[in-house]
Length: 256
Length: 221
Ligand SMILES: Nc1ncnc2c1ncn2[C@@H]1O[C@H](COP(=O)(O)OP(=O)(O)OP(=O)(O)O)[C@@H](O)[C@H]1O
Ligand SMILES: [Mg+2]
Image 1 (cartoon, rainbow over the protein chains, first blue to last red):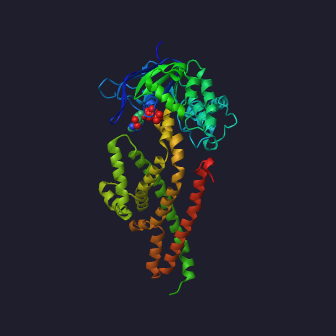
Image 2 (image 1 turned 90 degrees about the vertical axis):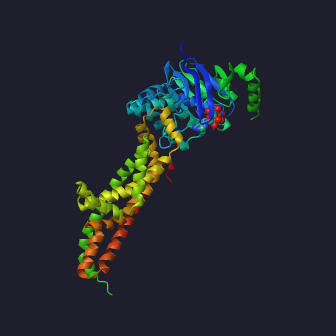
Image 3 (image 1 turned 120 degrees about the vertical axis):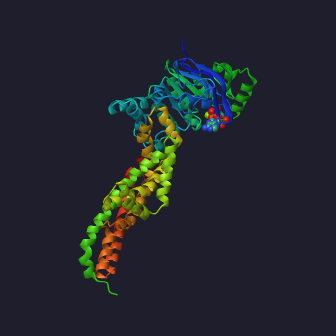
């Protein structure tokens, strides 16, 4: 079967810093992949490239069988039309470490705004969808609350509902529980676990919390210096890593 | 010297008619400056380098040269290019251009106060650039700049006497005319000063009201 996400020989640089060099990666449709690895290894950059928040310098990124950017090896990035970008972004949703909710909108408006003004749904339909999703994430009683009045865990659940309202095929989670107090991690993790049973939804999850990795991953990838050093099911990579670098990383993580 | 309340009473209708012109010029100039500012700030944020450069240059130029010079330029130089505007139109256009440069600066500050994460959220939800501005960025960028725009309006009010230079019959022009006709400047000029004061003071609560209306509920005091 065609992979849902595919990186082929991708290079990404920031000035002199090479983040990814001839990077290859695949995620199957519906697969839940957790990326772990030291700070600065390029995990966020990988997700941000899929969301078109960063461009690539060479290689090819495919989502659902379509090229995200058109890049010829060694040549410049070919101009990508806005229409193509919008077409590709429709397949992908992202949840951020710091939520990035719209502070001037209530929880309901946060979720309903894009269905309404991006997808063009009628107001009533968009709000019904938003209400349904907010109930699903356990926030049925917070529809008219502004983000500033919500806890971190509640804000992150609104952010997940907001992304899901656009019906993406791929969901990207970049350390979505890292900014939360420990007692709030569970409520967000529960929501992500509920999402992970959706068989067609592909999830790429970056985290430093091994509990999150264990709970969600079909496959864990240990990432270092822009390359995957070791990967496999969580029981293997987290509990019984083969590679020395994975072992020392996990020891360091456990100490924190 | 004696202050004549009789004279004051006699010239008041004339001064009030001129006050209407002053208010009209301020409002029209302010409306133009809001639009000019928007055009300039769009230019400064455009993808094209030359457009960014041009907008930046126009803004610096308009702020670095005196309003009086700009008024004269529009009034005496433009007709040479076949464009002739009435004194009033000349005046409000100059006010709008001059203060538009300040409005652009205020807009820019407001737009830059919106965190990057808001743009990234908009991209992740597939908003177009225009829809992102309209629904996400502007509603956050505008409320904090209402006070700056209010200051622009008040400065503009106080600069309307410059339009007298091209014979716009605003308050100072008329006060001056009365003074020179009757060799009696104290009453008309004092009255004019008081009228400007009242207008400026009246503007403050108005700006406050708009400010409070625009502020999102959760940040209201
Ligand atoms: N906008 C940028 N400009 C310059 N360098 C950048 C930029 N974004 C990322 N980098 C660099 O790219 C490398 C990879 O960064 P990235 O954020 O992807 O790492 P990460 O694995 O997500 O780390 P962390 O666990 O700390 O979030 C780092 O060396 C970082 O300094
Ligand atoms: Mg990161």
